[in-house]
Length: 145
Length: 95
Image (cartoon, rainbow over all chains, first blue to last red; front, side, top):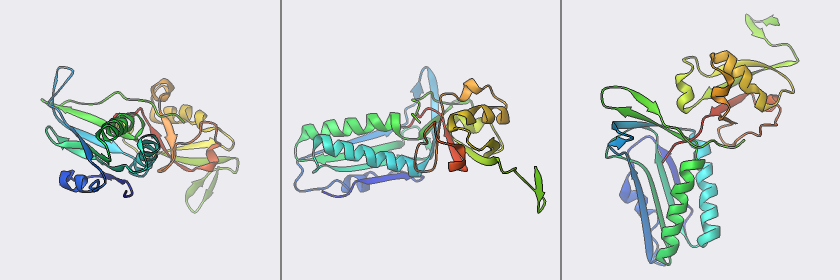
């Protein structure tokens, strides 16, 4: 089991590098989620999104979620989370989550838990840029103080 | 308010708080971070009124935002003088 690989970065996500972080001969299941900017949202044609983030706090949230995942699905999980900042075009990756575990069910469930919680707990914001020039910050989930 | 070295220095019972804006809030204020003068003992929750007035929006527009540092969400009940540099975080929409 390795320490979780948790990053917020301004460069393109290197998928092979993320997958390498969860390589483990003791793990028979590896699950990889890649969140990619899609071209349509609510009837609008999307050209790109811009991600804004508080990187240190976001990584701290990733650490908390990784610890929760290990408590629930096993301390032997390997976990990698990488989230983008800046402009990301349609078809490019905004977030990657990789989990390896001894068995596939642990890996599937832990990966789903991580991406679901990242979307509502990590201090990251998404602005969509539409064809023709307008842009809009997406509605989100309030953080609790 | 005293003048010291050409700068305005807040009275002893007041503190200057710098608040950085994120997400949709960035579009509300071209001047960033926002600086507000707050009385000592004021709770974090009550800063919203001052910030809203400073950037010229109704307080209701930032009621759903949380205060934080670079590494921790702040308690709404914390006194403002505990943290002179804060972030104001709207509802999140990453992933």
